[in-house]
Image 1: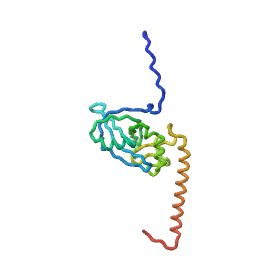
Image 2: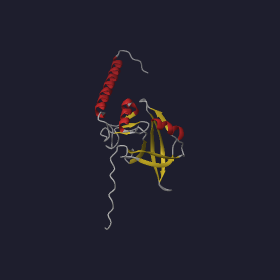
Image 3: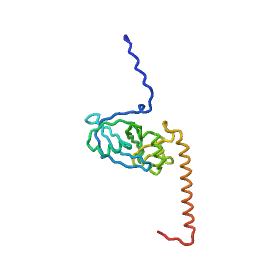
Image 4: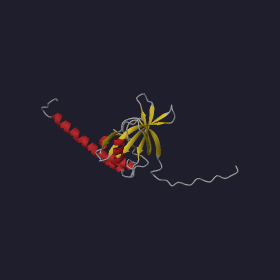
Length: 199
């Protein structure tokens, strides 16, 4: 082959760089914002990334905390913006059995808000904000939990999960079972009385 090509320099693995994406696109929907019961704030929108005059990729955007406020106040539909963050794919199965894959960019801030650990913290702070798909997953790749507003997804066997997730989940499930048992008992006692009023 003739001349030798030098070996590229080795890059050390870093969590914040292993999935780092930069995009320039047009904001396709107005930014929406919502404070979560955990104290965090999330905002979301959609980005149209034109690859050519006929080819456009649609990317959902998620912004957290301070960046969520900045996006809500300054980013408008039609603006061209530059974003960087973590690319996440989500495959949804429609009623006719076809699978559609959506891509989402979850933005980093200086302290890496929106990381897997912080998503789990948000989940445990208010689990009612999340859909629990564990019992009705048609596709094993579908997330175990999905945020009702932002679409953020969590998997119990996720590679970057903190070690305390499964034990905390077991405690939460036990509490939820106890809560449902109490509700069932209250309903039984109410109906078992001699007189009842229909509402």
